[in-house]
Length: 483
Image (cartoon, rainbow, N blue to C red; front, side, top):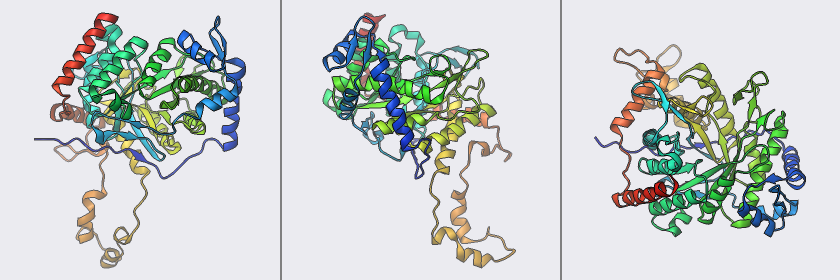
C-alpha cells in the first residue's frame, strides 16, 4: 500500500488580536533604542566588533560592549526584508512567508527521550532525531522541522548529524538552533548546497535556517554570532531568540523584559544588515519567570500575558516573527496541564499572527521528548486551525429546503442533504477514536497507536544516494576536524 504524504495545512487566521496599541509599540521601540544607545550590548567576537566599529557604532574593544547610535540602527534595518522564502527539499513544501498565514514546527532541542519501546528515560540520540523527522514529514501540521532532540551520540558534531538525520527523513524545510561556530556553520552550508544542488539555488530557496539564542542580559554568543554570519553570507535565514527570565536575567516586569530582550535581538539584526545588507532575518523572544521561592524556570504561570507581544514588536520593526508555543511545564504526557498550557497559548499566539511558530512535541519546558506527545499536540493544533476557519453560510449550508421537508418534530437521518453532509460534518478529534467495541479509546493510547502506524506504514521520500554519500563525506570530514 502506497501512502501519500499529506498536504501542508498551515493556519490561516482572518482574525487579529492586539496586545499593544501603536502608541505602546512606539514606546517600547523607543526604550529599545535608548538601551542600545546608552547601555549597549556585549559582543564577544572580534569579527563582530570590527564590522560594527567600521560602520560607526561606539565600540569598547576592551569590554567588548557596543553602543548603537539610533540613526545607525534605523538606517541599517531599512535593508532588512519583511518577508522571504524558506525553501524545502521538495519545492511544493517551500514556505513563502506572508501576513495571515502561520507555519508551525516541532520544538527543539531536548536532551532526553522516553523510549518508545521500553518507556525508560534516557539521553537522546541521532536515531531519535531521525524518528521524529519521519513523523513530522507525515503530519500536515508540520510545515518545517526543528531537530527535536540532541544527537548526543556524536559529541561536538551533533548539530551536523542532526541535520543529516533530518534531511534523510523529511522533504520539508529544516531549522537548526544548535549549529554554533564558524567551522560547523561552513560544514552546514556545504551540506545545504549538496541538498540544493548549487550555491545559487541554496540562496534562492534556502533549505534550512538557523536560530541563534542571545544571552540575557544584553549579551551575544560568540559562536552563535560567528556561525550566523557564515549563514547570512550564503543567504540562509537567521533568527535571533532572546530568552529573558523575569527577576533573574531580566527586569521583573513584562515591559522591562520585553524591551531588554528586544535590544538583544535588534543589536544582532543591525550587525547582520551591516555585514550583508538584505540578508533574511527574523525576530523571536521566549521569556519566562523565575519562581521567587525556588528560582525554578517557569514558562506558564497563571498570568502569562505578553508571551506573544514579541510578535507585535517584531512586526513593528518590519521583521517576521518566530513565536513560541507548547513546550509545557508538565512532567508527564497527556495530562490536564500539558493540554491547557498548549491550547490557550496556541490560540492566542495565532491570533497575533506570527509567520512561524515552534514548540510542538516536547514537555518539561522544552527538554523532554515523549514521542507520542507530537500526536497529542497535533490534535490541539488542528482544533485551533478549525476554530479559526470562517463559517460557510450559503444556500446549501443553511439547508432551508431540508428544514421545511422535515418540519417540527421530525428527524433528519433520512434526508438526502444529511447523507451528503454527515460524512464530513463530524471531524473526529483524538478523543473520539473508536475501538472494536465502538467505545472511545483513551487519547494517549490513540496517540501511541497513530505514532506506531506512521513509523511502520509511512515512508518519507528518500534522499538521493549520491547526495547521501556527499553528506556522509562532509560529516566524516567534520568529525575528523572537530571531534
